[in-house]
Length: 494
Image (cartoon, rainbow, N blue to C red; front, side):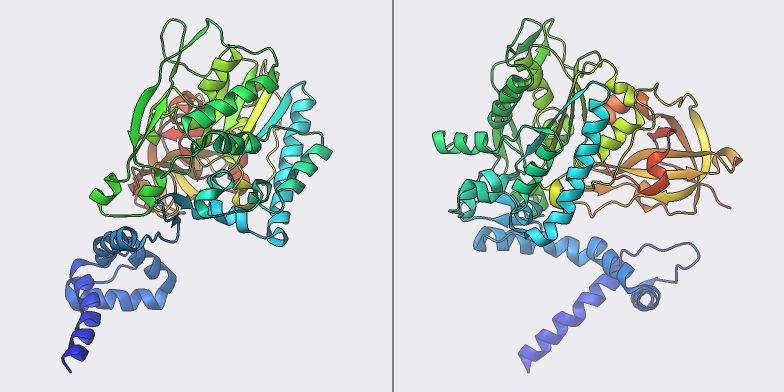
């Protein structure tokens, strides 16, 4: 009887504790019921169950007091004593961490993978055609994800070639048939592991090591220009040690001390200009690098692995000249193509475009068609700035903070009826998540009228362009008027 009483008491304690602390449910002003006290809290749950079970389930998962309090404790115990990860992170016996979508890329069968990989091939062939017609050479750089190269850490004994998705060779064949040039660094990285036994990927992060990135940058420079060599136009420092908590370690959602214990070190080599000033993308360069976080990992400080030492910088060093760069974290499949379509003047004077993306994008990325209307053309005339008011026609939604390999993200607003003009529309980017915490803007709803201070997006693209961007589908993606809102919008009451 005593055990039964304890069991029943523990079950009943959960809703009681949660009710006294609030259920973390988001309500509209019209539908919010009285949630004061225990009975009010339970009544709130009953009401929400009737109006939308999925909404309450998601809200409780993200905001529940017990989830926030107990999950890190239980996850830390599972990780420390049983070597277990979670739904996003796999843990090996030696403590290596692997991102589930990366492992899924390797394991996914051809039947489900082929249609999506075909979309990627089609999108890349389209881009190649558009660039080629304007005298620009495209070089596609599919970066292998961690399990493809560090397969021994997963216990795989297969031929390294088979560690790619079963449809990867077909992907390469399709691009070859379309005349798309590909630089595949897989064998280069696998041989580096076999030759020296030195890991080419970070132990607790999804990304490659600085040495692996430099190895690829040097080989890529030779592919672009066989005579490429460092020059006096740039300087590269001696190795500089950086220490960071890998994105996979963060996604384990452990207790703070346990997370901090997983920090690891890396040695980067920042690149500067000859006068020792910071490296920066060179719009006058003949080479444009499109990329994602594999390009940015040692370049932008928000990722925590130092700055000035990323793929663009190392490619510049080996080429002997600075390159231009459009690189958006988690945006390899779609966002960089959309950015190029919005501002095709970035292609002025270019002879080579290198398109880098992580191969997981082939099976889970967004490869919808993106077409440049004019090529090249001046940037859209977003000269208006200041305060505007409009109605939210659509808003992109964040994934749950803490379960994705980035801690900052921008969301997109499709704004209509701007300043009372029914035909005026714009796309607005603003902060949706900072340091794994959702901002107030993430809770905005379509249909709301907001007031916000904006500047043209292109005026802040150098500072904010690398941050993960959650794009909108449909007509919003085609809008030429694009703004940035630094401050949170003010909701205007009707």
